[in-house]
Image (cartoon, rainbow, N blue to C red; front, side):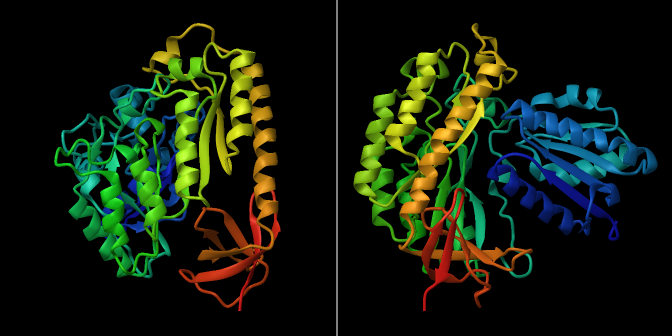
Length: 441
């Protein structure tokens, strides 16, 4: 066992990436070492995402590619973890005959026991289903060796909003928050290893603490984190507009370590579509929250998600989304075609929008937002920013990092900086997707 190797392939969001870090730590505690490719490994974990149909197709493609390796190495253990595993359960095991186990989102802490069970019984293992207290939620991802400049910290998981298009409540379960003391302990530990920036993760971080029943709330957690001296920056994602209030905006404006950036998904600019999506707010509600943010945090950068082609979306509905982009002027968006997900109510709605119309609408959204983002970047020329160095580009040797507003900056030369350095830079050029900076002093 000590000579065994593992490989983890991750699809989806930052939450999945962090879950993979936890699984990696568990496998290394078993004595496994990381392989360079799945074909070389004795244990392969495909950590899956079901949020969109395209992501799910990638998972099946990755599993299919392992069939030949499994035939050559029958002792290879192949596990599908995450949302597709939770959603598919036993059906996924039957559909993919060379798959050894499915590991649901609430069962990640059982990874090592699942591997041992597969090796002992040579039978497929279904480790899925929700738990009242998710054990893996309390597992930190320990830093091994020199720590990176940035780290993820899970504060909660699951969502209780049940938007009509979203599969998360069915694959991640209801909202569950970690105790604040546990989070603070983890953050203090990783800052002692050199981490300067953390990103707090949750499907709906604005709802943090509501399920604990002790009065804990997200702004108070931010205030507690702000008191950790070695912690330079705090980010968080994702926020739901329905649960976003002035208290969070006030914390962002008041607390030095909390970065001036928020991801606040809009999804649509049409009240009719927002109602059909069950988002719990209208366009005017969202605009009021944006106004509060910009009044309280003048330099705030706001990013959002947009879905085009939701069932029943008319040309007028879509144009309302375009007008919202022009009015709000997000710093950046992540836009997608509506993807019907099994088990959600939107999957069965009438008036599904043809794909060719979705493609055209998505292209228009991209064109509008690209123009807005590029203008933001042009306007940044000549300004001074603080960036946290995250690494060095392999080809160019250029150091790179992010501003507090989450904009990527590449330095114009291979300056003598190290990962984790906080550096003052002058923005000398605004590009389409990034900024070019020059180190000051």
